[in-house]
Length: 399
Image (cartoon, rainbow, N blue to C red; front, top):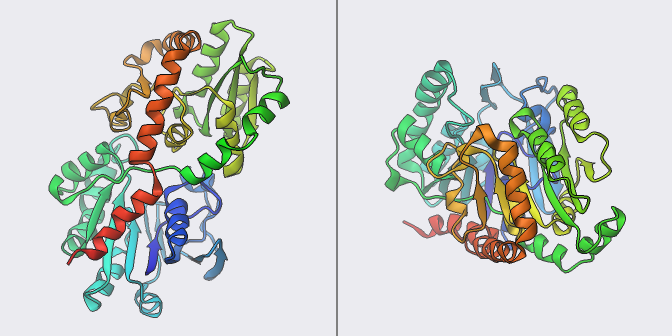
């Protein structure tokens, strides 16, 4: 099957949904092409600090995935972005399935294609929720309520699948876009279980513990991602100090690239402790290696794809973001089916709660073991990309 993915950003080598979907489609024998922007820095894209890329289209092939990068024709306030019409390109590619990530404003091009080719299918996933979008009147009422809603309304009759990635994303679609819940199906972000199992069979845990002077009885906490103030990483570092235990290490994976002030805050909070390890930005395999080294994954702030990574690596997950509790704007309860996640309820006691919860896990290895087993169950049931792509391809077998 020929699959064309349309997304605003595609960062080669990352553990993002677009990358892993493409990897697993190729693994199962499908021909995959990606149409995306010229932006290649995840930090510049996420922080809206990119300059409008210049130059014409560029093409490459990475791990069997054909990538076509296009300049924006429109880029208004880094919110309303479009490529030139894709009709001719879609005709030349002749995909059997078009997978659009979020409500891109070239969505009408894909709609026109499936109208011309009734045997082709169009699906769309959705990532926005109230914690990351629609946080002011113009965004909620104009960008989402009018511009993107119009594009989605016209596409909905032609969609073979509409997939919010979290329950809060489904609620946002329902309340802002007026999409009935029965038109949606949850498609959780997964993790690369093939890689996770490969790392677990390697010497990564032993090697990294020896490298950093951690004994087998040492307790290692891991956190990280795109470090920014909303991640509250400094609070976890403070909680680490409050533990006052010389047999505990904290690994911070990732970087605060482009935010020297926040990076300085983290370094100052660490107080030069050799047991606070800043790895910097790592490749995918190295991130998994450090998860193998760790005993528990702890995230004091906003959501990260590393939450799924932790579950895939069988780690107990501790989240101190109150919005992650059941019903919150970053509700993580759908990933907590087997008691594998502990979530704080009170933002005002975040540091104290983190220290208390970590200490509890340190001294109750049976609880750690149960949470780890639960994480593995959730990973195999919900986060396996082999299962996820099967769900998306099922749409192609629906009349």
